[in-house]
Length: 168
Image (cartoon, rainbow, N blue to C red):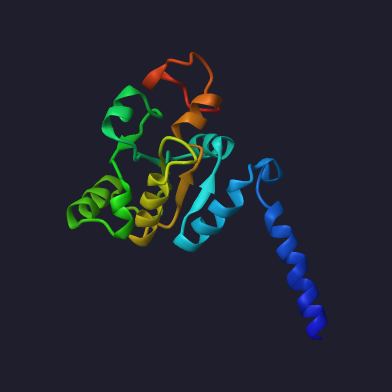
């Protein structure tokens, strides 16, 4: 009986990496980031999944955690900026926590998409973890970030805030 249980567990463990759209096309760093995301209470999404989320119904809250000067140069349409930095890893100040809660609003079921510059930027992971710890149930880290989104957005490379979102 124990062997059957082990075999079933191994079968499911082998299927987990195959879950999700395009899982086999994900870069190598994605698996490590997904483990951290699960541990911290949020999920990872790519540009295609972001496009589906934007097209699916009520829009998610888009939180751009880059510095304000980067946000001013361009962001996803409808995104709101609240800069996070590495110092926030040890916890948010009461002021920043209150501001994040104010921006995200009282609906903890509304999808929240957090993003930064690109997959190397740690800010979005810090912010996604903070939102999840505040009780938001559908927190997504768009790990490819603004640069990844611009690569998939139709239109001009220098479109700034006038770019259409992927899938539009």
